[in-house]
Structure formats: structure tokens, C-alpha cells
Amino acid sequence: MTEKIDQLKNITRDLLDAIGEDINREGLVRTPHRVAKSWEYFSQGYRANVDDIINEAVFHEECSEMVVVRDIEFFSMCEHHMIPFFGKAHVGYLPNGKVIGLSKIPRIIDMFSRRLQLQERLTSQIAETLQEVLDPVGVAVVMEGRHLCMQMRGVEKQNSYASTSAMLGQFRKSAETRAEFLSIIGK
Image (cartoon, rainbow, N blue to C red; front, side):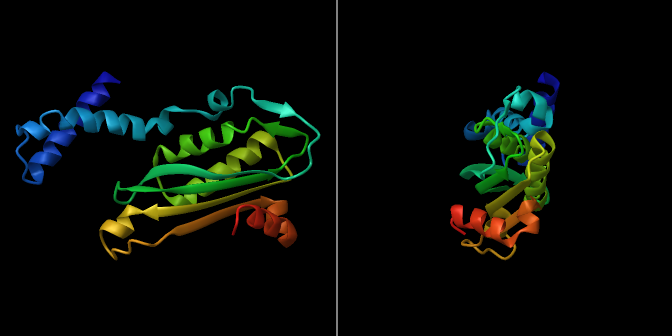
């Protein structure tokens, strides 16, 4: 990883120089190192895998009622501008003989959000992963994000949110099931 850190530091120095900054100015001398370490963290999802995250925390359980984890904070980086977007994710599933450790759901969200992303793709990746791991009756994911690329540049709409959803299985088929989930998450 040291080679990658050095590469990120050089890229940051070049960027600072290109925008007209003095890379030797006191406040910027260590900025390339800090930025490189930040990007190492922001991109850790590329080096993660689902099996390590789940770590055998899928359990056989005859629970058949909806399981919901809501208001899970997330942040990611927009792949179009490499500017942050952040918000809350709400995840529900209908078990089919298996449940997952509740802390694994935010960890799965983190794995996919710590990559350059689109909120639409991120939402689907979370739902599809839970569908694959648990084979539940259905999975629902709703994400609400504030995109700094919309707030800081372009249309400059500071109070806008993007909402995305992925509904699989029973959540897609049944308006009643979908409505119950949306009611639980307050939507």
C-alpha cells in the first residue's frame, strides 16, 4: 500500500500546483499525505469482501416477520465528480429460515459505499447482496442522500435529497408488504 500512498501524494501535489497553490506553504506541506490517507480510507470498499464482513454471522432461525434496520448513516464519493454524498439507509428483509447479525447490515453498506459510487447502484448492490447471502422472501433498501455535487456546483440546491429504492421478492410483488416497510421507516 506504500506505493499507492506515494502515488496519491504525488497526484495531490500535482493537483495543488495545477490550481495555483504553493505546495511549500506551511498549511499545505503535509496535505498530500493527509489526502492520500483519506483516499485510502474512502476507497477501502475495493479491498473488502462480503465473506469477511459477514464472518459466518448468518444464523438459522424460523423468524418469518420483517427485520428492519433504519437510519444507518452512510457516506460515499460520487463517481462523476469525486465529491461526497451522504445520508441514511433503511434496510428490511423477510427471513426465509436465516437471519444475519444486525451489525453486518451497516458493514455491507460501508463496503459498497467506500467506493466511487452512484446512489442508484449502491442501493441495488446492498439489496442484491442480502438477497444472495440470505435467500430471503424479500429485501427492501431505501437510501436518502445529500449530494455535494448538487449543492456546491451546478444547480447549487442546498436542501435537495435523492431517494433511491431497491425492492426484491415480496417487497416488489406486494404493495401491502412494501407499505409496511415504508411505514416502519417513516416514509
